[in-house]
Image (cartoon, rainbow over all chains, first blue to last red; front, top):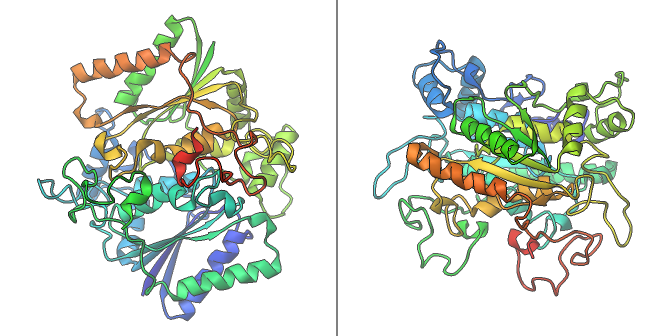
Length: 258
Length: 258
C-alpha cells in the first residue's frame, strides 16, 4: 500500500523526528511505499494568498474560495499545491504527525491544509439537494483512504482525560479529525498520542516506539472512528442537525460518533 | 482604553476587511486608542523556527520551548515578536478577527500565537506546587485584559448549533477561547460570529455591522465566559481533573464553564 506522512517539526533530532524516521522504516519493511512531506524541510509556504493561483491578476478582489476553484479547474494551481494533491491521490493512507502547539497543529501544517484542500478537491464537491449536502463528512475525493494523527504533547494524559482541564483529547482533536479529515472523506483511525514528552527517557522512548509500531502494523485493520455520515440519514438537510431520534437529548461533539 | 485588533484576511476589500475598518472607527469614535496587527499586510512570518531567536547558533538541537525561554529572558527575540508582545502589554482589550478556515484560525494567525506566545510570556509562568500548577487558565501575564473573537464562516448557524454537524460553535472555538486566550489570563468575552457569509447583501451587512458595533460599545461591561480558574479549587492538582463534586457525572468541554 502507499502511505503519505505529512510531518511538521522544525528539528530533525527531536522526538518527532525520531518517531517519523521510525515510521518510515517500519512501513517500508512491511512492504509499503512511503512518501514524506516534511513541511519544515520543504520550507512549505504556510499562508494562503492570491499567489497560490497562477492566473494573471485581474485587479478584482481576492476571494479565496473562488480563486481556489478557478485555479483547480484550470490547472493554474501553484505547483507545490498540485504536488501535494498528487501525493494524496497516490496514498492509501495518510499519517499527520505533529507536536500539539496551543491545542492544534502547527501553523505550517494548518497552512498545508488551507492551501492543498482546494475548492473542487476537498470542498465544494458534489450536489446539493433535498437529500444531499455535497460530498462531505464521510464522502468526497479522499473517501476510501485512511488517515491517522500521530501527536505529541507536553501535557499529562489526565489533563486531556474526560474531565481534564485541557478538554478530552477526542474533543480537542475533533476540529482536525472530523473537520479536516472526515470532511473530505477519510476514514479516521483513533489517534496515537504521546503525552508528557519532557519525561521521555530511553526506556520510555522504546515503549512509545513499539506502541507506534503496532499501530502502523495494524493500519489496515484498525476500526475507524465511527463518525456519522452527513448524507446517511442521521441529519436533517439542509439544517444539518441530528434528527431528534438520533442520540436523543444529547449535545456536544461526541454525538457525531455512532 | 487601548484596543489591539489582531486581524487575518488576505483581501482588504472583503467582508472581514470592512468589518475591521468599521471596528477601528467605532472604537476610535468612542475615545479608545486602537492598534491593528494586520497579519497579511505585515507579511507576518507564520512558521515558528530557530530563526525566531537572535542567539547565535550553537549546533545544538533546536528545542522550541527552551529556545523561546532563552530568547525571551535575554532580549534575543526576533523584533517582530517583541513588537507584538509590547502591543499585548499595551492593550486593555484584544480582538482577534478572522475567517474560520477548516474549523480554526488561519495559519498566519496560528503562527502569530505560536511565535508571540513565548515561554515566560504566555506559558511557563508561575510556580508549580501542591496548590498551584503555574499561572495559567485564568492567571498569567495577560490577566486583567479582555479578549474577544470576531469570526466569519460560510456555514449556517444551525450547522454550528448544539446538535449541528460541525459541532457547537462554543466547542469548535474552545481550543482558541480556552486554550489560547484563557490560558495566559485573558477574560474571554462571548464570540461575535457571522454565519453564511456568501449570503450577506447590503441590508444584511448593515445588520451585522450594527450588531458588531453594539458588542464593541459593550466591550467593557460584557460578562466574560465563566471558565473555571485552574488554581481556584475546582481541579485536583497535579492531575488537573475536575473534582468529583464539581459538575458531577458530566464530561466534555462544557464542564469547564461554571
